[in-house]
Structure formats: C-alpha cells, structure tokens
Image (cartoon, rainbow, N blue to C red; front, side):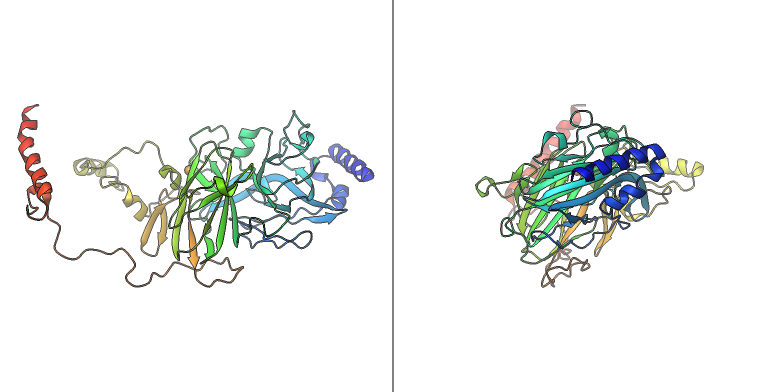
Length: 466
Ligand SMILES: [Cu+2]
C-alpha cells in the first residue's frame, strides 16, 4: 500500500520530467486499465463481474466504467481528455470529457465499497474531480486549491473513499469550472444499496442534463456563455440523437436525472404518473412522496423518478421549457404570425431569388422544410415520427412501453402500432358553424348565441371610439 503510493509519486515525478507524452509507460503498468468508448450509443448495462450483486443502470447514450478489484478496493481509472462527441447525426463537437466521451462513463458501486479512483489529466490545463453528493473525507472532495492541489496537465492523482450510503451522485471538475463544464466534463455515480431488495426496480436509467453554446458551423463550444446556450442536451446528445427509453409493460422504471447546466429544467413525462424517490442527498421516504408528471430539476440537483410503465405506447419525455426542445435558432426571429408578407416577399425575391416566406402561420413550416444548413449544425425543429414531422430538437426523447420484452432487451422496438380506433382522427361530418356570424342555433346553445349577439352589438360602438 505505502510502497505502491510511493511508486506512483515517483512515476508521476518522472513523467513530469520527460513531458506529458511519455506519462506513464512505467505508471500505466501499475495503474488499472483506462477503457475508452468510441460510440455515442447507449451501451448495454454492465452486470457486476465481482463484488456484491446489484441491478445495473443503463446510461442513456453512455456506458459504465469497468473496474478491477485489488486488495479489497474497487479501482477505477478516469482519463480527463479532449474528445469528439457526436451530438446527433450530422453534428460533432470538440468537447472535453473522460475516457473517450462526454459525459464520462457512469461509475457504479455498492454501499460499503471502498473506491480508489485514479484520475489522469490529459487536458491542456489543470483539473480536479469533485464527487458531488458523496459523503467522504474532506481531502478527497476535489475542490482545487481548497482541499487539494490541482492535478497538473500530464499527471495522475488518486482519490480513495468508502461509499457510506447508496444513492445517485455526480462527478465534475472543481477547477476552471465554468470552462470545463461548458466543455462537457461531468459524469454519474450510482451507489447501489447493499441489500439488492432495497429500492429495487426493473429498469434503471441515468442521464445528465447539459448545455452547450456552439455557433452554427463551429465545432467547439463557447466557454464564457452564462445563459445563452443553444444546444440543450441529455448526456451530450440532442434530439433526434437521444436514444429512446425502452421498457417492458408492467416494469417498475427509475430514471435518474442530474442537472449540471446553469438553469432549471422541468422534465415532463407523458402517459404516466411518477414519484420522486431520490435526490442527490439520498432516497426520499415513502411518506414524503407525491404523484407528479413533471419534475423541476434545479441547477446542481439530481432527481430520481419512479413509475410503473403500465401504458403501452410511445410516450414523449422532454424538458417543458419550449426553447429547450429546439436546436440552434436565431433569437432574433420576429413574430410573423398573421403578418401578410406577400408584397414584401415579391420585392425581396427580386434581390434574393431563394428567399422563403416564413412564420406567417406559425413556425411549423420550419419543421417540414429541409432547408440547406451550414456545415456541422442541426435543424432547429426536426425529426420524423410515424405520423409526420416531430418539430423537436434538444431535450426530447420517447419512453417506449412494449408488451413482453425480454428482461434485458433495450433495443429500439420501432414506432408503436396503435390498436385500430385509438388514434385521434379527423372529423368528417358537417363543418362546424361559425358562431360569431350568429350561426349557432339558439335552441342548441342559447347562451353562446346570446354572446354572439352581444359581440355584434358592441362592434359599432367600439369603432366610434377611435
Ligand atoms: Cu430545459
């Protein structure tokens, strides 16, 4: 133990002397392997190969970091490094993350486990890792300058602590925080209860809410943005790049949602009621839960929601801030609803032959048109469902509830096939009567007919006022 630490310090010093590119030929032999992930797709849950058993989580568009057991410690190796992350098909971003992706891999362990986490810094600047919500010795808390020296570029530091309680926590730098989090550095920590029967669910998903500011055509986020982010992401993915949550009808489902952006996100699930069963402070006692369909996840919070997936179908799950279910858009879009642009368009078309009249009837047109875009950006409102354009972007996905899936089957089952007669349909009878024209027969709706007469009576009076 002591000799091992001395060895690591020695290796670190040598690496510093030879430069970052030589880090660790020697040290790597002693360090646990640092697996790297090349795919932005949701990886199958990692069944624990050793230690206490548990039901593993599924990281949305992510993965769980393998570990090795050594002398009673679970040893993990995180590598902080620049990564290229596909945010959705058609757009890649130069981010900073861990082990090949942003966010970093999920760290899973069990209450009572002793963790030794090696953190190698391959960034061009120093970093640290703070273990948000974990109860640990002060010197392991990862606040650069306060509880430890920063991890210089090219060096590896070791964190050691025991997981005193189960729950859902997050990790992120506490060093040049605004830049490093704007670049995508964050990850989840799931500590499973010692007794697998406690808080047991059938499917357990995790994702972090994050946000980026990348100008259309650019690849690297702006790092000084405070509010004006234009890519609202779940695990560094935006719709239509976010995988669905595939669940079996009757499953008890948990979704753990952490927010490391700079604003709150009201996450709304369709077709089901859920309860908040956990926060980054721990599990919520049963007596303190109530039914919800929207949970507001404030800045720096985690909320675990649970529901029984009893309704088959494709159920939307999304942030309820409507500008968070859009991809990059100009904020200068004027309200054109009801504005007759015909005269204007004619004049502009003489100068700009490709000019398109937009917004006159709302912005749905934009979801249908595939307009030419700059390289490496995404349409503002996009995606196609079984019935047409979805007109979404950003923080939107679908919970797909299906009959009879295998326990561990998370493959996308395709769109839901609605039983005949269960889809909203067009009325093809007589056209509705225009009540303002006095068309509502008094016998059918006397109060509405009366209202119509009042409207007509008032109109001339209003006109004289001007
Ligand atoms: Cu939001």
